[in-house]
Image (tube, rainbow, N blue to C red; front, side, top):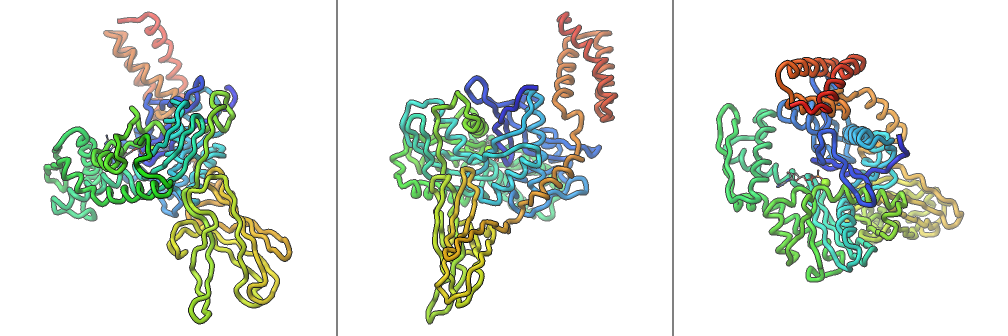
Length: 569
Ligand code: ADP
Ligand code: MG
């Protein structure tokens, strides 16, 4: 095996992709089925072995109980998923997917892969970012860089033409998240100037809205419809959503509660079903433009990224608001992975990207809880005081001084929050830092609090007591869904036990595909003999016995090679 390569991974809500640099340009690494997109679905097959990607997605409808999808939406929360009687966190399920992507990439490249750059929605908060990093670590990958998804799409888009100067808006609507990012490109310098988003709004919500509409139309309630039938209805709704991009009306039949029901939808009706989602998208667009301090007329280009931008109503909204025809890459779902590979090259100081300079911003404000003196001198708590405002270029570091508020106070508790609300209860509590101070009258002791956002949008806090010079930087993380270092190790060991089904392994898949191809070319006795050997090989795969698999492959391979070289008709 060669030395390590850093891969770029787009870990999507619905689909994931891997890309690498190849002769100075990023390229998507297809999976073992030769597909660029690997569904972000993890499940167990009948024998209890792990299946990931398309084969797991195929079982979403038939075995919803042993299959997990859309888990990215729960990163950074304590939600648990059941798989074969055991429960796993979103971080662990993501780790299983990442491990699969890593294994396939290793086999494909015949290279050890120890490091990756993973893309995250720009609007992911601290806990979601940390959770993503940990999922990579559990999967055995070093994750030193996360890249914001629209930033990744933007560098890929801009890298095609480094001679220009322009202002670009990237509208990225994936399965579960919306990010809108605005950037200035001055030739090879790409500067992100603002980002806004909603990490609870994506193409899957649009599909859910269609499901809800059909249930209502047919007088059904989600809670009473059987899980498998609901999965089927969702499947039909997804089909209708996609078909309506180029058609005015689509209809299909679905059997629900034993009754065959006609599902009909027109493009106009679809737009009205999506009304509230479209309004939310508009708010995000407006905020991004406002934060960038520009007018929509100053935009030179609008780029659509993410599978869900293939929705007519969404394109109409973006066109109308931005006042220009949005551009779409041929494969809008690949731009992010390709950009992540470019970021990996930047990190590795690859010669091919030596001229490229990229700066990004933080997507959320960071601050602490403060108390204020209200009417009559009463102390009121619960106010948010921002130390770093959103859309500041990262890495960045800011300091603010705070004073004691009570006489003889011996400790200051700094509660660190992320968000945009005045009141801390509406923001995300990241952690606490306790700082010892000398007992003195209120207001006499000062603490200088320094916040640093690193290049990945992750935070470091240092507090210094000005009278003593003592510093404290041990932030007690209070976020849900984020693990301690020991838990990461434990998790990795626990997941080791979940072995991939041999049918899923790249080499086995390739041999089977080759056998199928050669089978189609042969006839008569030769075909029968080949059929016998293929079946023996399949039995061996199903037995999951490594030795039997090797023996069966050894019996099959020489015949395939012989027939391939002879080019038998
Ligand atoms: P993610 O990166 O979040 O996994 P993708 O960029 O792959 O998401 O986009 C997936 C979303 O795009 C899904 O919600 C899917 O329904 C939607 N989508 C994909 N193709 C189409 C299409 N032709 N029309 C409408 N929506 C689509
Ligand atoms: Mg995506």
